Image (cartoon, rainbow, N blue to C red; front, side, top):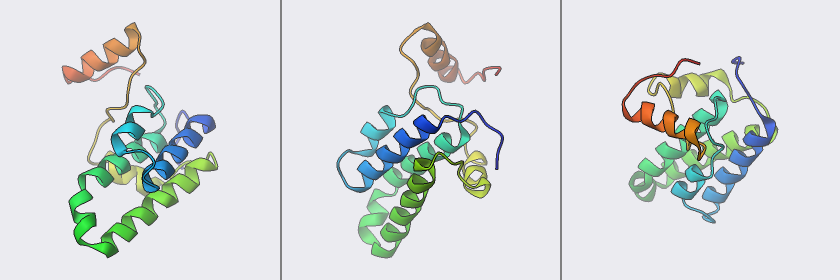
Length: 128
């Protein structure tokens, strides 16, 4: 598994958000806005991208019931792993890393969060 900064409590929050999306209690946008702020956990970042992908494929899910079932199962699998506080498998994390250098996760509502957002807007990578 990947070396990362992980927080089991944050992973449990994300697992619950994914379940709420799958049960149609909240929409993807609400879930994303409720994600842990400024997370560096690669499993949470991969879950973020999986939810964005889920939202982007809404029309395809409506047209193709088999695709919908596969995508729902995939998100359920991600939720199950995160709920246990475990890291997602490397293949899932790497699948999203090859397309995205970082996630647009919500930032803290303070000066540090503002700087994160501003640097992201300018497309400047921060030094970790």
